[in-house]
Image (tube, rainbow, N blue to C red):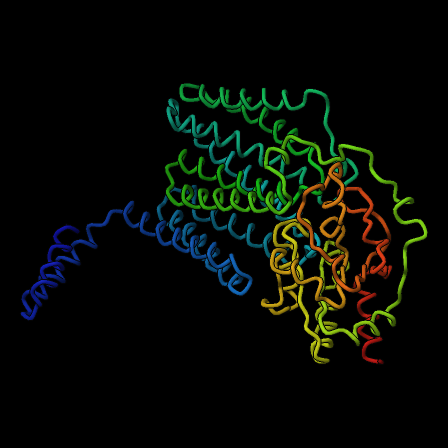
Length: 493
């Protein structure tokens, strides 16, 4: 019937329709074609609309200016997909579905209003874990319904493997980001990589066996994969967490795609594939930003290959402290100022104070820019999110490759809570744990102001000789309070 409609439209293009009888015939064919749509056809049409919204959403989130719109498009796409599932009738009951949606929405609203910006990386890690375990539960529920799963059983096994690894791995990543004592330091034992490889091979074998399995294999598969997820993330240091989060995000998407094959749901396959692919791309970007391979992140320890310099030797007698009044005087005579945000800015919630100081500088004719390192903070894009919250103009955010060649023309570089991403040891010490990692070359600025609570090291656990450089002044204190003091001193000057 649809073919007939297309033929009529093609004929109309070749020979314009002018007779009312012909027009009526086209309308009748179109009406009949629409009415011939089955429930599955309408469902697939809805899934297609949702998939298009997902793609547009991901596209929108590639730039801060369109990120909010992209997020909304993705949310609308998910709403469309959920409504299609509910309308298809393949649910337990409408009341149960409504209660579940209401509970999920209430949880989302609560998290949005209570979770601090500094806790966003942990929340993202938990979301990845929840996505992984949700896929495992979906696959397990489907296995209960069928007696001879066949190919769907293999897909269910892969879902259990990837989803379970994502779940425990994400929980441990969240614990590391929260700096919980039991997860803060990398943990490993001799031969751990071989044990992990054995668990992976066991999981793949059990997945293959599930084609003719009874479902008991699925339980053992999930248990082995939960252990595997923990063993993969426990040895990884906190400095690699941006890479790990991106990778776990990809895992959650792959688990969802596999679950889509289990239940024959097209939109789940599409959405999971999109998340999986985008997560892998982001992982590669993060690895490039740290000058490390993915294998190095997953299977090597983030530690020095030689002796680590002692902080007392690096800093003794070389640290020069300053005050808010002195910094204000320096800023008065400057023409170009670059802010370098780090995790300390997030902890202090200082983004609005930074914006206020930047506005004052711009009003005085000073050029203001922000140097953004890809792995600054605890997750990809962390600094961009913080600065966007303070309505910092997008064109002032400069990526590392763009801003680095211009630091030598910078009068004052103000580093707020960043450490490893500005540590020149990455360029000078081949035995350092951050050796070869691209950094922001703030040491090239005429004057560097380091705003930190103390001389404590970053996640890499090594001292930063920049603190003791001739052109560096240390301003100790809470990032927000210090910036507020600088604003007050600048206004009084």
